[in-house]
Image (cartoon, rainbow, N blue to C red):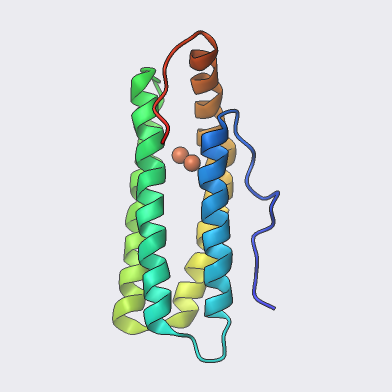
Length: 146
Ligand SMILES: [Fe+2]
Ligand SMILES: [Fe+2]
């Protein structure tokens, strides 16, 4: 039985578009967990899913960064810094996998480190950001979500 991130793990946001992006990543991760748990893991297929996850995560962070700038949100540098560090960590973990095929290290990152980071980041940085974005929207201000 592969590990799965439960549906209630990531806190819902006051901006539904943010909740949706987090949900998409939860589903992508759960699909990858099934591939990692196979008796003969398919490295090229895993690589393709990791590339898709990097692509999605980059767009996810850019969307939040863009909207924080739109409302002149003072904690922007702190929130963006967490994104930059997390994305660098993701790239390093995937590069290590692609050069070494070190499956235990990849599983440690994807099954433990990344979901713990996401859960914590979403419940703190994203939660407060969504609250301020919603207040801006409620006052008639525009936001920029795909
Ligand atoms: Fe987020
Ligand atoms: Fe964020």
